[in-house]
Length: 544
Image (cartoon, rainbow, N blue to C red):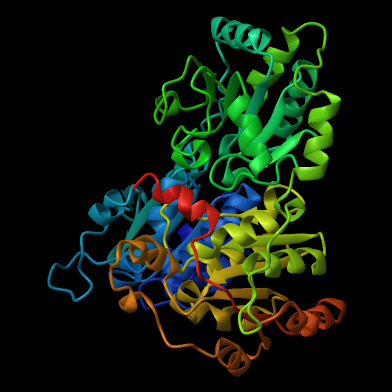
């Protein structure tokens, strides 16, 4: 057995069951080894897509996403997706073939490139230590929730593996316990508040954290909200405001703005979640709970900082609480949430022209048309608020939002990764025309994998964010506009069913597809009105 095979076997034994990537000469044997050992390999058409698929799959399963790529150019193609994963603290392992000959065409400083985008570089150094180093890299990604790049030099991969490789000793997973004084400080802050709001972020995306937060909020009378990446965590709760920040409804913004205490639970309270602080009342007490001490107060000064696991901390606060109180959970507030709590509840002045459809009207119609069991992936762009907020999701695993790096072009790959993790749900990829064309290579991947995916392209024939950012100042935005593209024809050529949508009535074929066997994916080329920026983009521009 050579080292490539031994490493592949060891990683599968550690728990790897899904691998994404593209095969080249440098990772061919390693990829076959993980497949032979029992993992599933999904081939993408571009390494950026493969990396983002693995990222989305990891977010949706809470397992380590694994990518295998060729040396040099194969690795450099991962960098945008790798930067997104690193910024999001996604547990991700990139298995990158590497050359050691500086005269090779493939020679680049892969560890330096990995470090530059925030990933942790590791290198297999010898045949004797290769398996142990690979296992250690996998555990580092898993236990510290980090993006890790493992370089596997070609010469080491091809060398004979030792019969009895030495594995690193397992490190027990430590649940971060909050200090008693910190718990009491948080209890005191919540007890003093009359209008508390809990905002749950990425660190709350678990059943234990969700249940603990809902239980505590019920006892102390707090309203519930999430950051964008945790959307769906409190789906169905009558006291949920949905998303805090730029995506917030008018009601959510009003109530969060009136809160006298806001607690971020595993939530960065960054500019997006707080509208750069403008969402918060100037006299509100801010508290933050996170397992990472360096995250506390990073974006906004906080009055109460607690280092601790969200579920454990919320449970501890509830245990010290005492008798339940109504707090902000009173009849008039509940009635308003029920009547105004979703974007689909808000009246819309339809701006559709007959040739182009209002994206709000389109999104609302799609929400009513599609089954509740769905997983929504969203690309970046002016359009992104519409599908993010109008399309309801069943829980936090029903929404995959790879936006930490704000790269256009990752949305389709995001949805593929999330779809493979939840095959029981209808996958919905929401893209702008710029992102759809940038990631178009993965349209074939959807067909090849047999995914019954709905791809919705909000097609404004422009990079809308740039048009709306620079256009009002009198700049020529012609360089950000493009001729109309028949994306439906492109999709049909790849094996999709497709429709060009200019009015809501044009969604009839989508309804037929939803009702039918869905043997092929469906692409909607929605020609949308784009005369003004979406509400979230207007908010974002205020920080520029």
